[in-house]
Image (cartoon, rainbow, N blue to C red):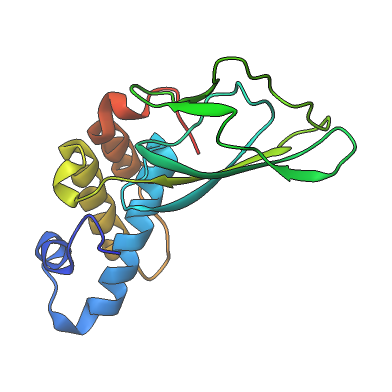
Length: 175
């Protein structure tokens, strides 16, 4: 899995040499995680698991390529896999949702949070597909993580700048 920001670009951002490659790679991964958590957008293609309370809940990740599998705990706590004949993914715009196919009904689910587990293939296909503001946010965070690598802290101004760089992509979304 290629990261959205290359090692060379990150090294140029922090003006570092080859001796710090491992540290910078760690900063890249941390920055990607921060942006994904802040925006609900998956920057690198991978399988993601989301727990829902109801089949009609919004799916909080984006972009979604496909649903791999949906499992749920029935009212008697027996676990089942939901047939693809029952649902369709409505992912033309965010938030994505599961929709019933004609003539189908949702099964009864056990009471409690996270009784429905949706496994999705999600993420941008290439770094070029990622909104530029998110790449900029990653670069700001990489610079902050690298500059403060000894203490592990991150200046509030850098997080604010990263939030602003993400822009409207993050409004109302968290993983």
